[in-house]
Length: 268
Image (tube, rainbow, N blue to C red):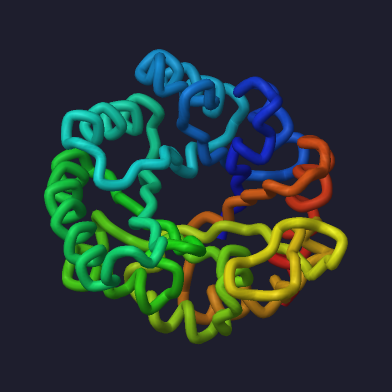
């Protein structure tokens, strides 16, 4: 398994500064944030993607992926994103499933997303890319089972799931061994972050009564040694991408969490 930094973890830094921090603290790659004014900027997509790819390579790192926030977007827009992924040198492109506000039946939302997903996967196949659907709270793909249902029957070479134990905490919890087993060949990427209960903050998970806050990996409510043990047992050899979105300064997040994760990874 290889370690990357999702560049949104250091949103206040330039692409070159993100890459330098990733390299300094022992990561192997960068997963690039793609939004308006992101490190890969939607308003200047190909130039910023090309530049981010060059910066990554110049720092002796690999591109772990491109992370736009798209779902049910028009095919012309999807093609632009995939072209940027190619310019960046990304092996995969993130997407989100549909949100679940409760005003439309789950099955209808699943049908709509799947109808959009299938032609996108064909575009990915033609470009040699893999689309990865993030397991994310408050979405129809909020659990490993739901994510598996979203992609079931599609070619795992070109579509997969981002397993995110940190997001799982916001929905309750799913045991890592179960999650990894359910995802099977569709396990494509892993996001690394954590949180813990704190009655003094406002981040209340929907439908629950205990607020949560994002914290350093060593302080949170996820046993990363157990998560990595389950991934290793399943033969997972992909990216572990630090998505630290808590309130610590950017360099502190990377300087604390990447070495911590390296230590856990190197522990038998």
